[in-house]
Image 1 (cartoon, one colour):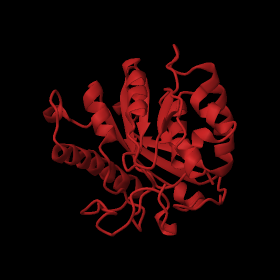
Image 2 (cartoon, rainbow, N blue to C red):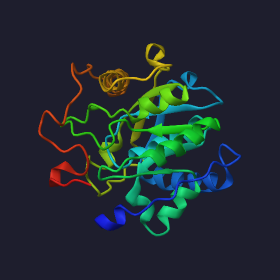
Image 3 (cartoon, one colour):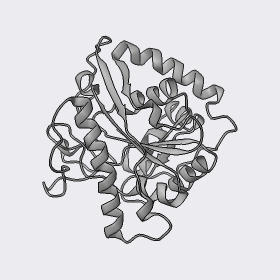
Length: 265
């Protein structure tokens, strides 16, 4: 487990490369892709036509298990033919070998423990300004919903989209929980099982663009994004859309860390 002191260490931000999918990213993607196929399969059910072939955008999806990032990266790299750049929790970047590899392929560390994330947000803006793809789980952590549905999100993705004037595109995914339960750390390899993805159309945020939003408006806009992700998740699950987004605060749960252990990170 990463110590508190180590988790708070200053984190170096990645640099934007000339290529959308540089050689190092291609090498890592192909190795991880082979490993992933031993665990589960990935299927993009529909929505590829909703994503620009070039140019910057933010891909925002639901977060069910620790495998979501690798599955979403697989879809972005192999199905959409774009280089994925995630905002990932900072302690991962302090792990020997893993940290330099993540940074080397353009992944962006995010501070935990309430620290202001100005540097990571600036790094994400630089990638978007260079026409890259940023992938975000707006919930900020694994869902707390007992049934695995998306919960209320945080405003980082919306703020980033509005400040850079780039599209924000929602996705819903379901299936990694069969291979690794939410908050679980043990794999149950099922290479025949498919994690299914549906990508939605760009979310219209025109009424919020070009002006400074109040905190209430940021929450409202974030709910708009999460509702679209909720609808796509219901579609890919083949179930009715829940009436409300799960709110961990209303349930007295912490909004970061493994709440099942009662810990905060």
